[in-house]
Length: 343
Image (tube, rainbow, N blue to C red; front, side):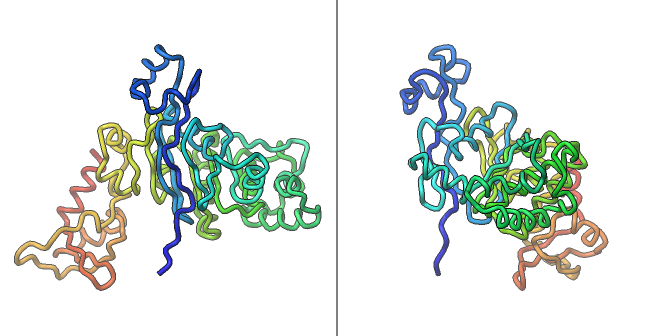
């Protein structure tokens, strides 16, 4: 069986700002706190020895507090900022080693970027904003407008092709930004806090839109956010950053259930566990003489989704992975998770 390799591989990536930055890496000085390093050398380490892989079609979320290095990381991955050291491979090609011509080709055809600030051209209509990435690729007007119209339908901008950006709401402007990024049919999309400037209701709609587009198109997404609820909603896996380093990478379920340290535990403390933990995670071995005549439920259901059926059952519920018994849960197991969610 041919197992595909990662879409993105990041290996030992560093970004050090300041004089003689490359001389900091690999020395004891690099282990100093940010404040000590700045005081002693005038340098700041924004990204510190970061490594991870992203699978084809995965939504990989990077989150952290302000100043954690997450936005610098994504800018290094796209070479909007030149890293100090490391490797960033896109399907085996190291983006950091290519020349400017090849980098432009990659940005035009292989990956695209969406940012918090939409960066729309105010004097151009929606259709021409979307088609702009194709225009700079030399695509003829009729062809690029045809593609732009396809993407307009895809992101729900029907009827707005002739509008100007200042005639649109913030949410609609961000749809234009998404459409522009999709127009070149990239393999990978980098989204750096794209919805943080939107009000909560529009933000929720745009999150749902990204999920829908991902399901329809299967693009590989690297999504930057400071919002745990957004990360959990969107991410297949989440990387949590602190002071330029990745503290933990895992599925939303893994981060909530088994935080690597107190920093991650504090991050996820207020998030309702019942919304994330699945029955697989809380299933236990049957006790001796336990009555398991309750209903059978799939292991992929969250505790929240399964609570009503489990609580309504007088007997333990069998948790199944297809035809295989994973374990059982009962009312006490469910209530323990719900109580932990509300704590």
